[in-house]
Image (cartoon, rainbow, N blue to C red; front, side, top):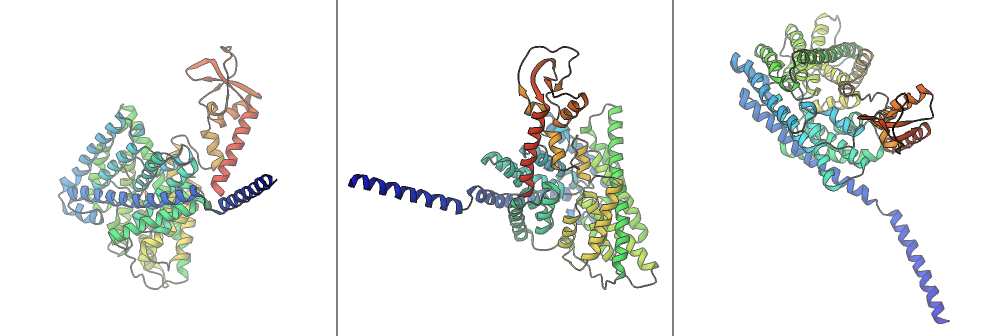
Length: 552
């Protein structure tokens, strides 16, 4: 009897212990989430040092090429001889071609091209959230050379790719889930923007708005942690100063908000011209190269001829352009020179990117916007019969408006301009201008620069995650595998490599409940079967999983 009572007491104690353990487990922090946050901080720190090293590399190449770092690029290019200024981008183009050739030969870079923000978006939205470490290293070297020898492009796109590459390298070593892997890509992007601009808030919003395409609470925290970590490191290493010193632009009047709206429309037109010029130039260069059977890998030296020729006469168009922006804000240029530089900057940037030099569009967007705003401000100040803000005020407004329209990122761009200049007094005017510029560009072009690049690879992200799923899920991933022998020549069939969207369209077109599936290289051999019910079921499951990723 006593043994029986002790046994019951032990069972009751065991039950109470298990209940307490379950309660503690429910209330305890999720170790997976803690692990993600720790690695977000690690990605932020590693990306900060990666960006610092990347900037040091650009400065080293720039010092060797022009005797000045990237912050004084225009002055350095203006101080060298005509021949050296013209030849430097050509020689740099040969070096870039050599790197692209080797990277293509060993399979490091797809189609022998540089890498940037579009590849990061593609990895997050379309692929498995991974970026090759070798591709990241090769792309960073290509961009370092390109920007150091005078290519008119931005360092921010390559920096974001560096951050994403670091995140992918850590994932390969420690193995995260697909959702966490994508979150770490966003952490790398946010840290890169924050480190490049000394702008932690903008880094977070850029990663959420452009790379992740989502403001889900589950990704906000880790991305913010990475951004803040990167800024702490860069400030302790490079100093806590804005990228551009905001000038004293004097008084701002009520009418300036309306004038800023007009400037936003103008910047939208300028951004549209830039995007269309880049698209047209890229298409024409490819057609010409195909006509003479020249590999795209060998385009950079030819582009260097044009870049060097323009840069020899107008060095303000070369490089990242931060010195040019600073001088524009300071009012060092006349209206006539600004309009010339605006046209040439668009042309040189289009040549740089279409001829396969590495780099992004953020910095050129800032320069183009500063020119547009300064020209508008000079015209208004000389013609208006009433008091208006200074030219510097409109130059800063133009920076945000043009850049936001080009990248399709109005929210993060607005914050970046705030943090770049350290001036929050232009809030209303800047928001109005950015919104209108983006509206104009979307009306005429329909896509941001990043989405245009992705569309050239067959991906349309304009319809959100549901459209991406239809493009990226393949028939082979959802079909029922079977082998029932050869098919009749006249029988309808699906390709195993076709997308789910193509398969559903084919089923609708033929009004079939299902079709056999074949491999592309063996069109007569059945390898599976896909029914309409199965296809829709798998699509629905993917939509639910995508909804969880985007909204939780």
